[in-house]
Length: 317
Image (cartoon, rainbow, N blue to C red):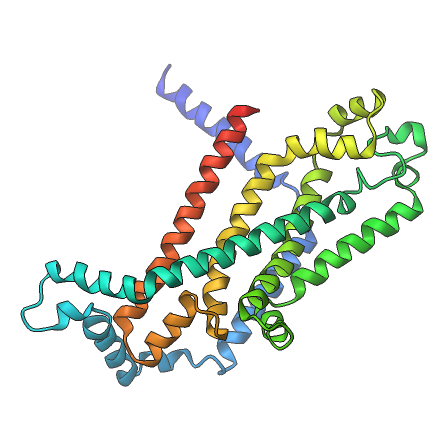
């Protein structure tokens, strides 16, 4: 092909791309939302409340330099003649003194909260899915008079109440909820577990309900035509189809529970957060960073478990 042919072909492709760009869907709501957030961010930065320029004051820069060059370094490296070979005894002493206990406590709190949250979500999710919580689940709307007639007024109230309850649970800040429950329950650990379970249960219930509702209806319509009831649909058809997505959301919230369990330790539960706060109060920043790193390790392990579990489910399907 000649050079002129290449140029004409490139011009045609650029013209086609330009035509697609001009024909793209435009939404005034998206533009208004983006403009509102942009103006809000500018107002926050220019209001003077954030005092961004104070971050560059010499005293603050000196504090940052001292933290990075001295305080954050492990104690053996700050000592005269200290070497990297001394790091392992130092880290092992911290782990045996409080690290392993805090690690297991944080992991146990996160696992208990995530399991309870998933159980609550599995109970609420079928009621949040308008395709299942209906007078005629997965029936063809053309044969029952439309979508509203298929679901029925009573079932619309059920799904509305279930979705509202899920929104209420996820709107409750877990830290405030744990603080309130701690005043009622004798065990601070249970207060933290229930606070995380309720908050994350509301989030998972909404996500699980949306997942069930967005599944392609044709396979489940066939189950209905074969005589399957609502419970059979939920347990034998919908759950296996949605399980990979359910696991993805579960492990995502598990990672969140680990991070939140670390923070909730500052209420008095002996988890990573408790000892992180203790190390910070004692100005032992090297120990504090080591304990923060343990929390990162738990999250990474949870992400690996999520990947393996979803891979096994996909192969089994």
